[in-house]
Length: 368
Image 1 (tube, one colour):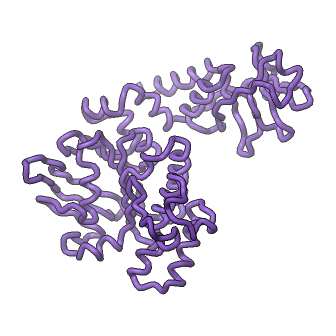
Image 2: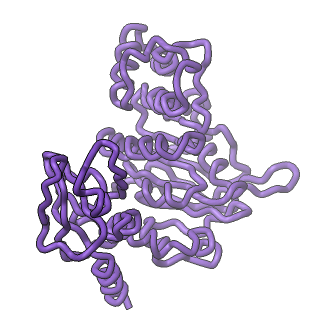
Image 3: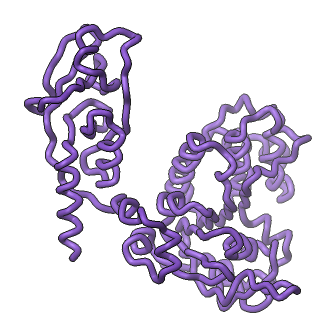
């Protein structure tokens, strides 16, 4: 990743009424990276993104893509060389899903048949059934529409993908799925991605590097997510990242936490201790026949496990995962015990909250 795919050099955007949207932006986006522009609304992050494909022209300074000043490239040619995904999927309502995805390849001279085959392949790439290809956008859910928007942006296999708040209009569960798929696509497709969001959690999750924009279009900090969480450049970044930045920073820490035993019960009502002797608690962990956790039940319910038993779940921790994952699992568990599972989802044991907190303290002490 030694080469810079995109470079901003002293870029400024001032509107006729005197408003400065972007103020003296100098920044390099490494080739093959996922770089996130984050900040409150009206801070210039979307304007900066749109200067890459000339949807907005800078007042001063230069934007280069692969060493070429974008102002020397005809707009239509430049835009076809990049994928672009926006908040509303922007699909053409009177065209089918396949026709929407095929738009740019057809403009670039691909045959109708080749463009259609590519579109159908991409449906699978982004996790949609090929059978949806003949539908119209209005027949899809919001999450499906956003996936089609991503497929359309990838259709001409562009080296650069620009994404302007692409997941902010979908519900949180769908958003988490789309975020996971984007990280998976990045691993497989080796694109340079610039992603705009106002959500710091999304920036931390997705970004190799994060550019925090302040009001007035000032670049406040540009660094890895970990560095921004641990060492905010100024008060603005510290305030924007928020009081829970220490909690977010645990996403980058790992520490061995000892496993403790837990009492389990299976569907036939048989109990067993997994991970060592179980401590005293009012909760029992139900497991299925494969040894995978199903949910917590109270010890009074465990004697007669039925389909109606009141099970309560929580998030799961994989040993070697981050301290944030361990803390999340403990906090989301009704018993206060974090459930640890192996790669096949089988129960290994539990982490006691005091052991999780002790590991966090040790990491903090090692930094002082």
